[in-house]
Length: 138
Image 1 (cartoon, one colour):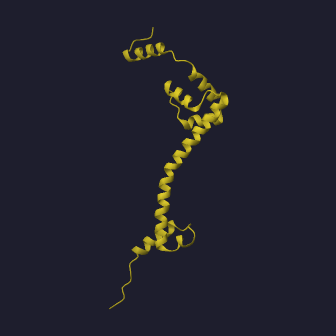
Image 2: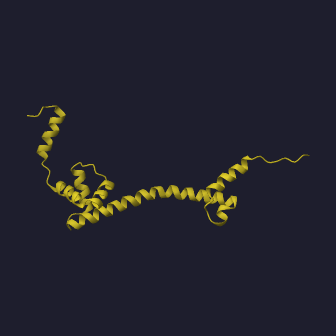
Image 3: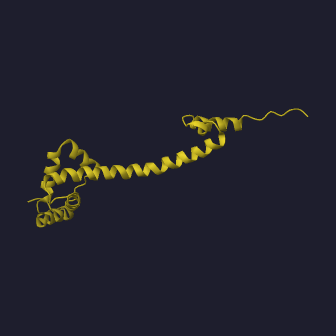
């Protein structure tokens, strides 16, 4: 019988896996079986840490906002600021608030002073009724 030469498909698959793991150390970049194990492990870690990164950034933004807000007054806190923002229906997310807190503290202080003021619901109700019923301004 003549000698049969193997095809190139398996070799191409292994080369592709090796290119993925070329930066790994030791056997993790040389042995095919360990390369596949490390590839699976790396992809699992990457998937897990994408969610963790979002969590960490949110925590960082909250910490920054809280630090700047508490500098102003002891009685005012992050949770009260966010509560007042929701009450006033201001759509500012934590990322934007943290950027404002870092770059321009006075602006954040102005926002917090503005939302602390008591809301006059009678004026707001009249405006909402006017919008809903289509009554022109008088």
